Length: 508
Image 1 (cartoon, rainbow, N blue to C red):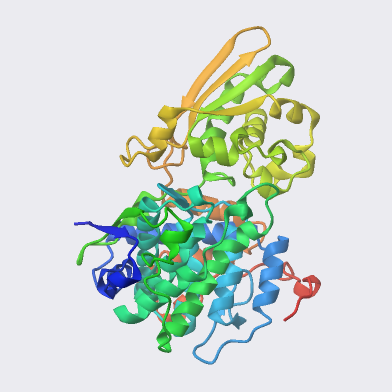
Image 2 (spheres, rainbow, N blue to C red):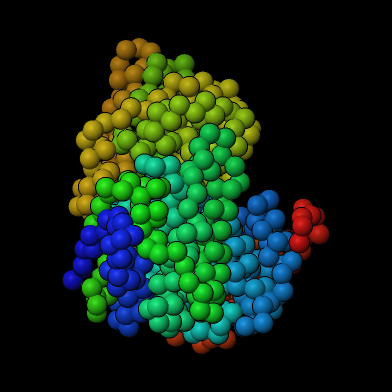
């Protein structure tokens, strides 16, 4: 049975016992030896496939080239065998924290992997790169890796259920540092004290503002979770060496809650598994069929349906206005409520267009689909008829869609909304969608074959056919893998594809 922990700010004079601190309770979950249930194992395999798919599609993009060059500027550390980087030969390795960094950037760059939205939002698949890197470096087998990843998902998603960060403009990776540290602790079989210290330090070093996701969005959007994963690896290393961390990190009078979140009078109810309770959180998360912000997934599906059924909607000459009635988050973060002129700028960066629902809806309406590359090209964004259609689209907050967005009932929770299209002839088209087609409750829920199909689609341009089959065969045996096989749980690009000779020079 899940236990809900009351978390509030404590004055230093109260001397809050470590055993009563949230970081300690997280560590207790991490050390619980409960077995991982088969549906969770199956979903972990799906998400490793998903991560590899989106990483494959990003291997030659500039942020990944730079991160890979940084990683390979550092030799394998003395404590293990090192870890692999996506795309490079399996015998070429680097230190685990740098593998977590480079692979984390590759996984996040296209904003195309799994998601979980509640009080906060998250991409819990970001836990996989640091946990896998440490597993490879330390020689852990598939069963240990499964247990570590289950913990990472559980902790991040439980924090996301309870503690809102974005309200205070704190980036959501502040929940990722603690979860990755806890997952690594489970992987390595560390004790409660060590994991407690690592969790506290991982949180302390990964709190940053949300400016990385505002205005003209930079390449740091992909680097932020990779940095959190790298910090988690380093925090575990320091904790294993007996080094301590600020405490109470959440509840202290100068801690995260008091000064970065809801303040000294705040209180949160954080759900965590009870002792002996299986870690099932990953089953509540969902992946993306389309390479775009998760709140855009359902809107892409609705737009492609409407444009296919009624091609006249694709011509801006026929459109007077399009209003997307949606949740508070969608309106203010990726909609016109953000008041970001860049969201209507055809010269904006890919990262910015990815966070513009007016742009995304216009392109999906016209094209009848979405492509992770073609839908973002400057030529596509600058097409005059698209720009004209794009500028007819606004969003509006709708109280009912906001309520459903925050609902804790999975059958009611929704990430879409209602579209009202007013045509120039005075007629209207009205339709709505609650969840994306690929969502567990959607029209076409993603199953193993869909994850594999997504991997093949994204990997075929960059991996040899034999490499695609090698990886898929290996990952689907995950719980049975030996340490030597876990060390090969990566993807190798076609010969000559990755020419790092042109990688930008830096300090290292």
